Length: 479
Ligand code: NAD
Image (cartoon, rainbow, N blue to C red; front, side):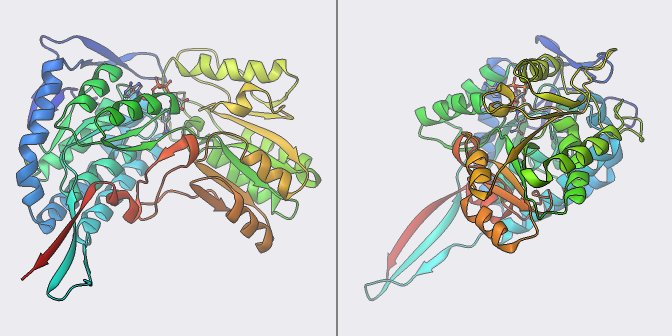
């Protein structure tokens, strides 16, 4: 498939449905602005069929042994690895990220499949000692039921993999809506699972009009759980819909990650790591380091070191293996980033590097560093979701933590310090679902991923990631 964009269709009850008789939407290459394909917009009947397929396949899938479910998921993981070059190519042309990042993401998705395949086999219940003779209390964990999952375009294979692998390993079935910007990557997961022997109807893929799809599916009584990754604004709507039916929801929403760089940190090392972490995927990452809060004594040194690393980045079409940063993912992103950068500039912030879009075809934006940004600037409060880093000085640990915790977001956070005491203080007081100290690595299949405050609730990854797909049943038996 390298060099050839795959056909895009809906996948319902094990069968493909194409564009005939349906509206279509273009899929666009963000590096060139050219159309790659048309995707069929699911009708209400398609969505009804998808929910029906997930409901009908649920009894047999929940009764399948955890060993059988594991075997299918492991096989799908192997197929993803075999197909990584082709899938990575499709990701780059539809999403824009450099081909190396795209291919690595496919391998990461395969690792997620392996982890949850095995975690499904470890989904133990409990036996609780009874207060009464002759009584046994059993705590059973059972799959919650058919799930509706909605995923964004920024990590078009690992985010769906976390939801799909956890749900399927637990014995749930699913209707999955990938982002309309990145349908080929989402469908590659369905193809791998189908080829690995997944029974028809256990995973169904729909796409088209996001709000219409999520509204219909979440209100459908056959859907028992919802999982969404995307913006806080949309997450709030999803949470309302889920609440109407008292349905469980896992919400992975926006972030505005603070990075606390203390005077005693290895400043040059922190700056080098920051440049690669910030501009990966052109900054379109919910855990992207964004607010660089730097202690006064090393502020200028950090800004200079960071700026020189940023200037070394190479922006271009992600298919070029030399490129380290691709375009923004779609045409809505450049104006959104521009509005935030212009507002900061108008309020007197200093643009150290970049600060403007790049002319030409495609949705390119310069890697940007803005220093001395005032607290009231929009970009200090709204997620830029683009290649823009902000630098602001702080006085002491109390000031740093107060600034870090000032926003309603609480997803990722980072701290750089040479002091164990300072690290512990940050670990205890920061309001975030995740904190990395002296590095930027926060994602792995075996560790929980999730936020607090308006960054959402529930966890994905790790043992926590499968827990939300089970309900608890107490069985108290007397013989
Ligand atoms: P957007 O809100 O238009 O879309 C974001 C994603 O949500 C898309 O994949 C879209 O298909 C989906 N979506 C939108 N409305 C939906 C609905 N009613 N029901 C179900 N899904 C829906 O924004 P955008 O311009 O594409 O992205 C920018 C913003 O989205 C960013 O500011 C960021 O906050 C957020 N975002 C977050 C993540 C994340 O990983 N948490 C990923 C991508 C985008």
